[in-house]
Image (cartoon, rainbow, N blue to C red; front, side):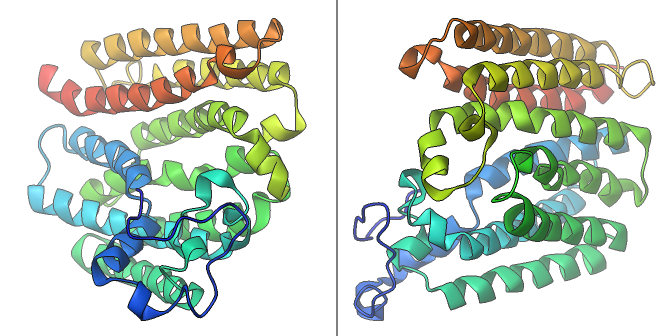
Length: 320
């Protein structure tokens, strides 16, 4: 989300001066938009796409709509708190990266202290909301996802290893388990399989974007895989993870959780994904660079893929 009414600032200029933080230069409307931007709404949309359909699968029909709304609200607050705390910790490198140079802490629209309090508050509220309005299993899973993203990914892995996205992506897989537990207050193989689908989806989803902006990551010393490895190596890893993801996605049907509709969508969407992944690998092998590499085609398709797959998860119970 783009924050408006903010002074444009080049990468490297952190808005921490008394002038930039003056409340007179921070209109209320822009401040509200800035706090919303701290939660990274577009990312949360994707998390909710993987949460709600699993509730339909767990119910084998339409779940209680009040429960769906509370789960979505709790999920938004939890993920929003995690994203705000991520921005608080990463504000130094965000100021140096072009694609993050207009984030609220960089521009000075929100102060570091305000962001920290905001993030912690959302974490506490979301945990209590899940615990008292849904169930405590979902509450602990939600809190675990938040802590994993902030502590394990942001503070420990991100700046130290090229495997940051691989293992840090676990936080983004947990909403699948939360969706199931919110309905059943238990676990089963179905959410575990979908958890694994998201686990193997995350690297080939994010690495193409990292290929596009690897200069940004290199500038701040974040060792994303495309920063430390050639396009050939990255593309090969993308193909490997993609094949495992597609195979895992097909396990739901033989285990009896889904029927023909989900299977058809998984095969067709997965097949197109593999076509795009192998296309990227072929271009990387041919040492194609720049815009002709077309790495963002797979990134954009990855979002469509996960949306189609989880819509099929929700629809399938009604067609069996």
